[in-house]
Amino acid sequence: MPHPLAAGARRHLPLLLALCLVAPLYLAWTWTGQLGAIDSDGPTYLMMAQHYAHGAADRSVTAIAASYVRFPPLYPQLLHWLGGADDLHRAHLLTCLCLLLGLAAFHAWLRLEGLAPWAAAWLPLALAAAPQTWLLGLLIQSEYLYLAARLLALAALAQYARDRRPE
Image (cartoon, rainbow, N blue to C red):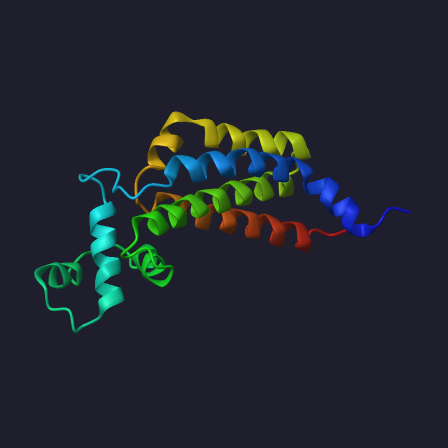
């Protein structure tokens, strides 16, 4: 009789292979100490993260402006907590990890909806290979965090619906 861990590993093999392909490519692509674009939301998110990192003692114009920004605070808080407020490499790493989490959540949702393991691995790969996904990877923006949160919510709802189905 096969070991239960071996059966679980085989079930997740397509996802693991897809992530092993995508993760190093995206990490290498996004590992930069540059902002990406000055006309994106990235500078504002970094300004907010620096405001959270340095606290109320910072009375610079930037800190005051950051306290009036209308963006949701979760992404800048994550940047602050993970050291991305003052380190662009870490900021890009957080953004990339959000994308990878979103791809894994997409796969989980597709599997819960009944797609075969290999088919469920191809769709996240297709999303990862899309040119716009690659270009967004160069920016410090909350889109990948939003993507991951929404796909995790869909996977959780699909799991809940599956658990409530009568046998």
